[in-house]
Length: 348
Image (cartoon, rainbow, N blue to C red; front, side, top):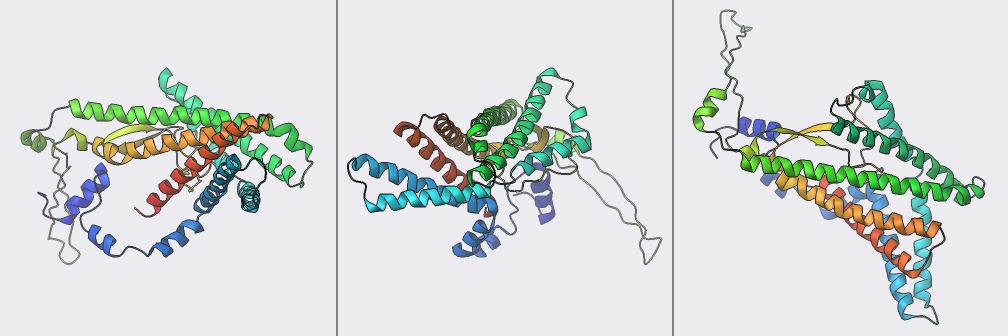
Protein backbone atom coordinates (compact mmCIF):
# COMPACT_ATOMS: atom_id res chain seq x y z
CA UNK A 1 0.00 0.00 0.00
CA UNK A 2 1.30 3.46 -0.86
CA UNK A 3 3.62 2.36 -3.69
CA UNK A 4 2.60 3.04 -7.26
CA UNK A 5 4.85 0.70 -9.15
CA UNK A 6 6.25 -2.79 -8.80
CA UNK A 7 9.83 -1.49 -8.94
CA UNK A 8 9.49 0.09 -5.48
CA UNK A 9 8.23 -3.19 -4.12
CA UNK A 10 11.19 -5.00 -5.64
CA UNK A 11 13.65 -2.54 -4.07
CA UNK A 12 12.12 -2.93 -0.62
CA UNK A 13 11.98 -6.70 -0.94
CA UNK A 14 15.55 -6.98 -2.17
CA UNK A 15 17.22 -4.47 0.18
CA UNK A 16 15.29 -4.78 3.38
CA UNK A 17 14.27 -8.41 3.49
CA UNK A 18 10.57 -7.69 3.11
CA UNK A 19 7.91 -10.19 2.24
CA UNK A 20 7.72 -11.77 -1.18
CA UNK A 21 6.85 -9.51 -4.09
CA UNK A 22 3.15 -8.89 -4.30
CA UNK A 23 3.40 -9.48 -8.02
CA UNK A 24 3.76 -13.19 -8.61
CA UNK A 25 2.51 -14.54 -5.27
CA UNK A 26 -0.81 -15.58 -6.73
CA UNK A 27 0.98 -16.92 -9.81
CA UNK A 28 3.13 -19.22 -7.66
CA UNK A 29 0.11 -20.48 -5.77
CA UNK A 30 -1.69 -21.20 -9.03
CA UNK A 31 1.36 -22.79 -10.65
CA UNK A 32 2.42 -25.01 -7.74
CA UNK A 33 4.00 -28.25 -8.87
CA UNK A 34 2.21 -31.54 -8.22
CA UNK A 35 3.23 -33.27 -5.00
CA UNK A 36 4.90 -36.20 -6.77
CA UNK A 37 7.05 -33.84 -8.85
CA UNK A 38 8.16 -32.03 -5.72
CA UNK A 39 8.84 -35.34 -4.00
CA UNK A 40 11.03 -36.49 -6.89
CA UNK A 41 13.03 -33.25 -6.76
CA UNK A 42 13.39 -33.60 -3.00
CA UNK A 43 14.64 -37.19 -3.23
CA UNK A 44 17.01 -36.22 -6.06
CA UNK A 45 19.03 -34.14 -3.59
CA UNK A 46 21.60 -35.99 -1.51
CA UNK A 47 20.33 -34.42 1.69
CA UNK A 48 16.68 -35.22 0.96
CA UNK A 49 17.46 -38.82 0.09
CA UNK A 50 19.67 -39.35 3.14
CA UNK A 51 17.19 -37.83 5.60
CA UNK A 52 14.33 -39.88 4.12
CA UNK A 53 16.36 -43.05 4.61
CA UNK A 54 17.18 -41.91 8.14
CA UNK A 55 13.49 -41.40 8.89
CA UNK A 56 12.56 -44.89 7.65
CA UNK A 57 15.57 -46.41 9.44
CA UNK A 58 14.78 -45.01 12.88
CA UNK A 59 11.01 -45.28 12.50
CA UNK A 60 11.59 -49.02 12.03
CA UNK A 61 13.90 -48.99 15.06
CA UNK A 62 11.25 -47.31 17.23
CA UNK A 63 8.63 -49.84 16.08
CA UNK A 64 11.14 -52.60 16.82
CA UNK A 65 11.69 -51.33 20.36
CA UNK A 66 7.95 -51.03 20.92
CA UNK A 67 7.44 -54.58 19.66
CA UNK A 68 10.20 -55.95 21.88
CA UNK A 69 8.64 -54.32 24.93
CA UNK A 70 5.47 -56.39 24.37
CA UNK A 71 7.19 -59.62 23.25
CA UNK A 72 9.78 -60.71 25.80
CA UNK A 73 9.71 -64.47 25.10
CA UNK A 74 9.26 -65.00 21.37
CA UNK A 75 10.14 -62.38 18.76
CA UNK A 76 7.59 -62.24 15.91
CA UNK A 77 8.70 -62.54 12.29
CA UNK A 78 7.61 -58.95 11.61
CA UNK A 79 10.06 -57.63 14.22
CA UNK A 80 12.89 -59.70 12.72
CA UNK A 81 12.17 -58.17 9.32
CA UNK A 82 12.08 -54.68 10.84
CA UNK A 83 15.51 -55.36 12.30
CA UNK A 84 16.78 -56.46 8.87
CA UNK A 85 15.39 -53.25 7.34
CA UNK A 86 17.09 -51.15 10.02
CA UNK A 87 20.43 -52.91 9.44
CA UNK A 88 20.31 -52.52 5.65
CA UNK A 89 19.42 -48.82 5.85
CA UNK A 90 22.19 -48.23 8.40
CA UNK A 91 24.73 -49.72 5.99
CA UNK A 92 23.35 -47.64 3.10
CA UNK A 93 23.63 -44.43 5.10
CA UNK A 94 27.18 -45.28 6.13
CA UNK A 95 28.10 -45.32 2.43
CA UNK A 96 26.33 -41.96 1.97
CA UNK A 97 28.59 -40.37 4.59
CA UNK A 98 31.81 -41.09 2.73
CA UNK A 99 33.48 -37.85 1.68
CA UNK A 100 31.60 -35.48 4.00
CA UNK A 101 34.94 -34.08 5.18
CA UNK A 102 35.24 -32.24 1.84
CA UNK A 103 32.70 -29.73 3.19
CA UNK A 104 35.01 -28.76 6.06
CA UNK A 105 38.05 -28.78 3.75
CA UNK A 106 36.25 -26.32 1.46
CA UNK A 107 35.76 -23.86 4.34
CA UNK A 108 39.36 -24.26 5.55
CA UNK A 109 40.92 -23.68 2.11
CA UNK A 110 38.58 -20.76 1.38
CA UNK A 111 39.51 -19.01 4.62
CA UNK A 112 43.21 -19.50 3.90
CA UNK A 113 42.88 -18.32 0.30
CA UNK A 114 40.95 -15.16 1.19
CA UNK A 115 42.99 -14.39 4.31
CA UNK A 116 39.99 -14.69 6.64
CA UNK A 117 42.14 -16.31 9.33
CA UNK A 118 44.41 -13.25 9.38
CA UNK A 119 41.56 -10.75 9.71
CA UNK A 120 40.03 -11.69 13.03
CA UNK A 121 38.04 -9.11 14.96
CA UNK A 122 40.06 -6.75 17.21
CA UNK A 123 37.36 -7.12 19.86
CA UNK A 124 38.31 -9.94 22.24
CA UNK A 125 34.70 -11.10 22.68
CA UNK A 126 34.09 -11.41 18.94
CA UNK A 127 37.52 -12.94 18.39
CA UNK A 128 36.73 -15.64 20.96
CA UNK A 129 33.70 -16.81 18.98
CA UNK A 130 35.60 -16.61 15.70
CA UNK A 131 38.30 -18.88 17.13
CA UNK A 132 35.63 -21.33 18.31
CA UNK A 133 34.12 -21.23 14.83
CA UNK A 134 37.49 -22.05 13.27
CA UNK A 135 38.14 -24.80 15.83
CA UNK A 136 34.83 -26.46 15.01
CA UNK A 137 35.67 -26.48 11.30
CA UNK A 138 39.05 -28.11 11.93
CA UNK A 139 37.56 -30.69 14.31
CA UNK A 140 34.87 -31.50 11.76
CA UNK A 141 37.57 -31.99 9.12
CA UNK A 142 39.49 -34.49 11.26
CA UNK A 143 36.30 -36.23 12.37
CA UNK A 144 35.15 -36.58 8.74
CA UNK A 145 38.47 -38.05 7.62
CA UNK A 146 38.43 -40.48 10.53
CA UNK A 147 34.84 -41.40 9.74
CA UNK A 148 35.82 -42.50 6.23
CA UNK A 149 38.48 -44.84 7.58
CA UNK A 150 36.07 -46.25 10.17
CA UNK A 151 33.31 -46.85 7.60
CA UNK A 152 35.69 -48.57 5.18
CA UNK A 153 36.97 -50.78 7.98
CA UNK A 154 33.39 -51.68 8.95
CA UNK A 155 32.90 -53.07 5.42
CA UNK A 156 36.33 -54.79 5.60
CA UNK A 157 37.79 -52.61 2.85
CA UNK A 158 40.42 -51.72 5.47
CA UNK A 159 41.69 -53.48 8.56
CA UNK A 160 38.69 -54.13 10.89
CA UNK A 161 40.87 -53.12 13.83
CA UNK A 162 40.61 -49.49 12.66
CA UNK A 163 36.91 -49.50 13.56
CA UNK A 164 37.58 -50.94 17.01
CA UNK A 165 40.45 -48.59 17.84
CA UNK A 166 39.35 -45.30 16.27
CA UNK A 167 35.54 -45.36 16.45
CA UNK A 168 35.52 -44.02 20.06
CA UNK A 169 37.71 -41.05 19.05
CA UNK A 170 35.44 -40.35 16.07
CA UNK A 171 32.39 -40.20 18.34
CA UNK A 172 34.18 -37.92 20.80
CA UNK A 173 35.06 -35.50 17.98
CA UNK A 174 31.45 -35.70 16.78
CA UNK A 175 30.21 -34.79 20.26
CA UNK A 176 32.63 -31.84 20.48
CA UNK A 177 31.44 -30.57 17.07
CA UNK A 178 27.83 -30.75 18.21
CA UNK A 179 28.55 -28.87 21.43
CA UNK A 180 30.32 -26.09 19.57
CA UNK A 181 27.54 -26.01 16.98
CA UNK A 182 24.95 -25.63 19.76
CA UNK A 183 26.89 -22.70 21.17
CA UNK A 184 26.96 -20.98 17.77
CA UNK A 185 23.25 -21.58 17.18
CA UNK A 186 22.43 -20.13 20.60
CA UNK A 187 24.49 -17.05 19.78
CA UNK A 188 22.69 -16.60 16.44
CA UNK A 189 19.39 -16.72 18.33
CA UNK A 190 20.45 -14.22 21.01
CA UNK A 191 21.88 -11.78 18.45
CA UNK A 192 18.56 -11.72 16.62
CA UNK A 193 16.58 -11.30 19.82
CA UNK A 194 18.68 -8.21 20.59
CA UNK A 195 17.90 -6.75 17.17
CA UNK A 196 14.16 -7.15 17.80
CA UNK A 197 14.42 -5.59 21.26
CA UNK A 198 16.36 -2.60 19.93
CA UNK A 199 13.86 -2.12 17.11
CA UNK A 200 10.90 -2.20 19.51
CA UNK A 201 12.51 0.40 21.76
CA UNK A 202 13.45 2.75 18.87
CA UNK A 203 11.08 5.57 17.82
CA UNK A 204 9.52 5.67 14.37
CA UNK A 205 10.82 8.13 11.78
CA UNK A 206 8.54 11.01 10.96
CA UNK A 207 7.74 11.97 7.40
CA UNK A 208 9.94 15.07 7.77
CA UNK A 209 12.92 12.97 8.89
CA UNK A 210 12.37 10.62 6.01
CA UNK A 211 12.32 13.46 3.48
CA UNK A 212 15.57 14.85 4.89
CA UNK A 213 17.20 11.44 4.59
CA UNK A 214 16.26 10.94 0.97
CA UNK A 215 19.14 11.31 -1.44
CA UNK A 216 18.49 12.78 -4.86
CA UNK A 217 21.11 12.38 -7.51
CA UNK A 218 21.04 13.46 -11.10
CA UNK A 219 22.63 11.44 -13.84
CA UNK A 220 22.77 12.90 -17.27
CA UNK A 221 23.05 10.50 -20.14
CA UNK A 222 23.37 11.48 -23.77
CA UNK A 223 20.78 9.96 -25.98
CA UNK A 224 22.12 7.83 -28.81
CA UNK A 225 19.67 9.43 -31.20
CA UNK A 226 20.30 13.04 -30.22
CA UNK A 227 23.36 14.04 -28.14
CA UNK A 228 21.62 17.19 -27.00
CA UNK A 229 18.89 15.15 -25.30
CA UNK A 230 19.54 14.62 -21.60
CA UNK A 231 17.78 12.29 -19.24
CA UNK A 232 17.04 13.26 -15.67
CA UNK A 233 17.02 10.30 -13.33
CA UNK A 234 15.91 10.61 -9.71
CA UNK A 235 17.28 8.01 -7.33
CA UNK A 236 15.71 7.71 -3.93
CA UNK A 237 17.19 5.97 -0.95
CA UNK A 238 14.07 4.42 0.56
CA UNK A 239 14.14 4.51 4.37
CA UNK A 240 11.34 2.68 6.17
CA UNK A 241 9.38 4.59 8.80
CA UNK A 242 9.18 1.65 11.20
CA UNK A 243 12.34 0.51 13.09
CA UNK A 244 11.19 -3.08 12.52
CA UNK A 245 11.84 -2.60 8.78
CA UNK A 246 15.19 -0.80 8.96
CA UNK A 247 18.13 -2.77 7.59
CA UNK A 248 20.68 -4.11 10.08
CA UNK A 249 23.66 -6.42 9.84
CA UNK A 250 23.62 -9.37 12.23
CA UNK A 251 26.54 -11.61 13.14
CA UNK A 252 25.78 -15.07 11.77
CA UNK A 253 27.61 -18.31 12.43
CA UNK A 254 27.17 -21.06 9.88
CA UNK A 255 24.46 -23.46 11.07
CA UNK A 256 25.34 -26.15 8.53
CA UNK A 257 28.29 -27.51 10.47
CA UNK A 258 27.84 -31.19 9.75
CA UNK A 259 27.22 -31.63 6.05
CA UNK A 260 23.58 -31.39 5.15
CA UNK A 261 22.23 -30.34 8.56
CA UNK A 262 19.92 -27.89 6.80
CA UNK A 263 21.38 -26.79 3.52
CA UNK A 264 22.96 -29.36 1.18
CA UNK A 265 24.79 -26.64 -0.74
CA UNK A 266 28.03 -27.68 0.89
CA UNK A 267 30.46 -25.34 -0.80
CA UNK A 268 31.77 -22.21 0.88
CA UNK A 269 31.49 -18.92 -1.08
CA UNK A 270 34.80 -18.37 -2.85
CA UNK A 271 34.90 -14.67 -1.91
CA UNK A 272 34.20 -15.07 1.81
CA UNK A 273 36.53 -12.68 3.61
CA UNK A 274 35.67 -13.46 7.24
CA UNK A 275 35.20 -16.49 9.45
CA UNK A 276 31.85 -15.19 10.74
CA UNK A 277 29.51 -13.58 8.23
CA UNK A 278 27.39 -10.46 8.73
CA UNK A 279 23.94 -10.99 7.28
CA UNK A 280 21.82 -8.01 6.20
CA UNK A 281 18.26 -8.32 7.43
CA UNK A 282 15.70 -6.45 9.54
CA UNK A 283 13.76 -7.04 12.75
CA UNK A 284 10.51 -7.81 10.96
CA UNK A 285 12.06 -10.54 8.87
CA UNK A 286 13.87 -11.92 11.91
CA UNK A 287 10.67 -12.25 13.92
CA UNK A 288 8.63 -13.73 11.06
CA UNK A 289 11.20 -15.97 9.32
CA UNK A 290 14.59 -16.31 10.95
CA UNK A 291 13.67 -16.92 14.60
CA UNK A 292 11.23 -19.74 13.76
CA UNK A 293 13.93 -21.34 11.60
CA UNK A 294 16.50 -21.07 14.41
CA UNK A 295 14.05 -22.50 16.96
CA UNK A 296 13.34 -25.39 14.60
CA UNK A 297 17.09 -25.86 14.26
CA UNK A 298 17.55 -25.90 18.04
CA UNK A 299 14.91 -28.61 18.41
CA UNK A 300 16.61 -30.59 15.67
CA UNK A 301 19.91 -30.01 17.42
CA UNK A 302 18.46 -31.57 20.59
CA UNK A 303 17.56 -34.65 18.55
CA UNK A 304 21.04 -34.77 17.00
CA UNK A 305 22.66 -34.47 20.42
CA UNK A 306 20.52 -37.30 21.84
CA UNK A 307 21.38 -39.40 18.80
CA UNK A 308 25.10 -38.69 19.21
CA UNK A 309 24.96 -39.40 22.96
CA UNK A 310 23.21 -42.74 22.43
CA UNK A 311 25.60 -43.79 19.67
CA UNK A 312 28.62 -42.81 21.77
CA UNK A 313 27.34 -44.81 24.75
CA UNK A 314 26.92 -47.84 22.50
CA UNK A 315 30.47 -47.45 21.19
CA UNK A 316 31.76 -47.49 24.78
CA UNK A 317 29.79 -50.65 25.58
CA UNK A 318 26.71 -49.22 27.32
CA UNK A 319 24.01 -50.60 25.02
CA UNK A 320 20.95 -50.82 27.24
CA UNK A 321 17.31 -50.43 26.26
CA UNK A 322 17.20 -46.85 27.53
CA UNK A 323 20.23 -45.93 25.41
CA UNK A 324 18.58 -47.45 22.35
CA UNK A 325 15.43 -45.43 23.01
CA UNK A 326 17.44 -42.20 23.40
CA UNK A 327 19.33 -42.82 20.17
CA UNK A 328 16.28 -43.88 18.13
CA UNK A 329 13.94 -41.08 19.26
CA UNK A 330 16.67 -38.45 18.90
CA UNK A 331 17.54 -39.60 15.39
CA UNK A 332 13.86 -39.79 14.40
CA UNK A 333 13.19 -36.27 15.71
CA UNK A 334 16.24 -34.96 13.87
CA UNK A 335 15.19 -36.66 10.62
CA UNK A 336 11.63 -35.29 10.74
CA UNK A 337 12.77 -31.70 11.34
CA UNK A 338 15.54 -31.99 8.72
CA UNK A 339 13.00 -33.17 6.12
CA UNK A 340 10.62 -30.34 7.07
CA UNK A 341 13.36 -27.71 6.90
CA UNK A 342 14.75 -28.93 3.58
CA UNK A 343 11.27 -29.23 2.06
CA UNK A 344 10.25 -25.70 3.03
CA UNK A 345 13.52 -24.32 1.63
CA UNK A 346 12.99 -26.08 -1.69
CA UNK A 347 9.26 -25.38 -1.95
CA UNK A 348 8.38 -22.20 0.00
